[in-house]
Image 1 (spheres, rainbow, N blue to C red):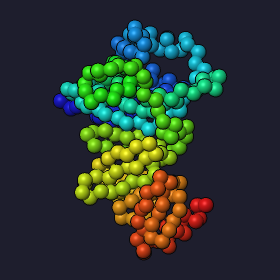
Image 2: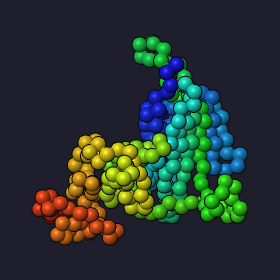
Image 3: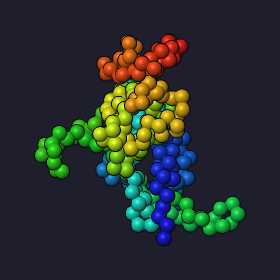
Image 4: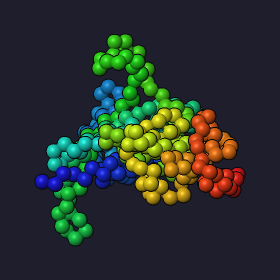
Length: 272
């Protein structure tokens, strides 16, 4: 039997997160199975049944707004008709009083397939959510499965990882992780032959991806500047250009081949 389309389920999951934190609940409601269950942050915060979940959301007045950061996704097929998706992301909650709370959040969605009718009356299989579990990871500095000293402190997001607007790009990471990253968060991407990987140098962290610079350049033309065979650069993070090298905002120095130097310098000057 054919397994669920993981890429499609990932796209559906990320769309729900994007829409949800833009206060658009339609994709969330449309994706719920009739017997869906939602588990919230608090003890006993459980809702069962699609209509009960919808009623709870629509009956509550929401005065909050949100800023969503980059989304990292892990997904795996379980059998032929079930797919588990775990998303982690930075999130800022904006209260009407002006208070802002930054958090690091994890959402776990269990997808299954339901038989439905399309516009022509044909029976088709449609992905639906049967379990949604939302949690805040806690700080744990112990290298163990069970924390020896539980301090109950939530992991807070860094302000530099939160962006209200901007282009996002989709990148394949190691160990089946997918990254939906804001272009604004990326300083540069480096190709490392010894690792057979590229390394994304973002504002708040670095991470490995399996795609080549050529693949990224092809998928997202005119978004990042190819300054060298081994580098794609976000011009917004270039502090200065010196002879045959770029100085990035974090102090990193990136080489520029002599043949490219004049063209890169001209391009950066035109952006000013």
